[in-house]
Length: 286
Image (cartoon, rainbow, N blue to C red; front, top):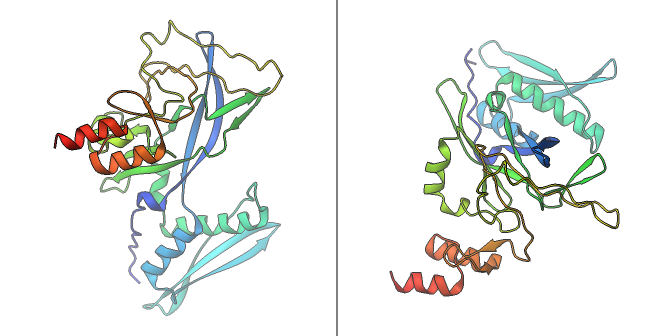
């Protein structure tokens, strides 16, 4: 076994994204919810790369309980030295299925010792404002709406295995975070479908974000209600108006609301989210 082991750099599809922190931020008399995301890999990704690096029959894992702490050892067979080489780490329990989560966590940490996914530690600070329909505040507790999720749309590294480019998309495929910020223009030019924001929380840019703060209106029934988002200008997403709408999509040409099916078909045929009328016009002009 060579002394220099370089695991393949993680692809966008190998990386999972979760919300690590939620904060209510007050700005010019208004408030909005800022989230921080964390990039991570799951145990199946580590298994895949351990198999590809060493062969499925040439590595093994062991779990040991020491002082009530669960450790995982990943041993790799060294053909030159004719022995097992071991690297281990300790895990912490998760909020869901604590023991299973602890076993998985120590395995993933041990895999990092071998080099799997180590590049994720070079990720930038991923923060942006959530939209009105994505979260609500009930007293002091912030609740994320069902179905809100994010994933890596693009990632790139330098020769030192450090992250140099990163794009985070939401569940609808819209760009929410760009690193560096200068990447946004070129990425959206190549992926125009990521540029259109959902109607629920984006209608048009605010003329003056500081002059138009929106305050929280509590529900008259005392139930939790999503706060309106007021984003300072200059951020990754930009300041936006907020309103509710029955459909999350609109035509890029005429602005009418369209269904998800109509949007999908239009993007497939024209590369843009258009209503049926505008789509037919675009196709007839080709």
